[in-house]
Image (cartoon, rainbow, N blue to C red):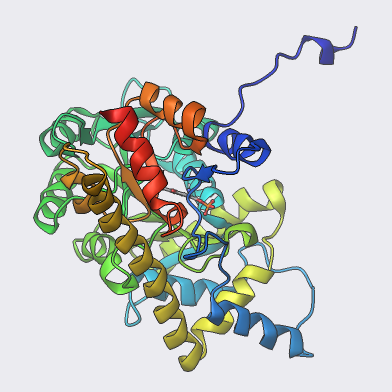
Length: 404
Ligand code: PMP
């Protein structure tokens, strides 16, 4: 028998497996509140009008071709993406940045880079990275695959449905000096719960004291408040405090470019010389992995962000998505009350971003799926983007039934 016969069946992906189950479900009442992709008020995927216009321009432009991008991607796109994150007036002369395969690919390049170059704390065989508990599930596998020692820090108190600030601080304090700390830049997934600006300040101070390294994962810039500038406040603050942050950016959600795999990975260095050395190493990581990134999504972002009218339109499109999601958040709690739920759902309205972290148990989630064909992850997370006026009462009644 060949070695193939000994290979065990691996488990399906926690989130994408549910998406498959939704697709094959034949119940016409079915609702998908699992995957974090925007849906419009009729439940359909939405191509941002600014993105559509950029694509039309690209199609009509006879100078556009399908040549390979450089290893680090389209440098003009990267510059625009970095200005989007660090601010339009940011000095990028010491910031190394490369194009990436969306946020996942950025995390992977960043993890590989840190694993290779961060000095291992004494006695440890791998660089420790602390990720929040809970977090986006893929973080665990990504950083493990990069050869890092994946650990957790407390983030959420499920009794109070609030940030476990004391637990977070205690765990960062306890970690070996020089660990990597992964922070969600805004709209923490799945809890929708971010530190306040005062808390960010204390986290920054503690990280300095401990000589930790900061990895920001920014997958929702613009989605939290509707304003991409406001949503970058935490990461910009850390840069202003002198941290040499590593930043993973995704344009999947805020530009609706999920399948285009458009992102960047950047490292804030101390000098142009450091930037140059870091760039060379990032390229050495990328070249044997996939040579160079795809160009369609980055051309769209570049086209939008180099044109004032398209940029203005884009910001309005992004705000429209954030506003609709926010209105669904308010409506869900309102309708839960209307259908008779007496639970305290105030945490849902104080959360931000794409998700409601409801606090429902895995058993309750299972019941929602088996009894009502409502598909969600078993941690009680609901994608508010999947809700609309056509299904919100059905979902609220179902939640009331399983939580009553
Ligand atoms: N980080 C977080 C916290 C996310 O929620 C996501 C998307 N679910 C990503 C990164 C990356 O997504 P993508 O690779 O599609 O950009």
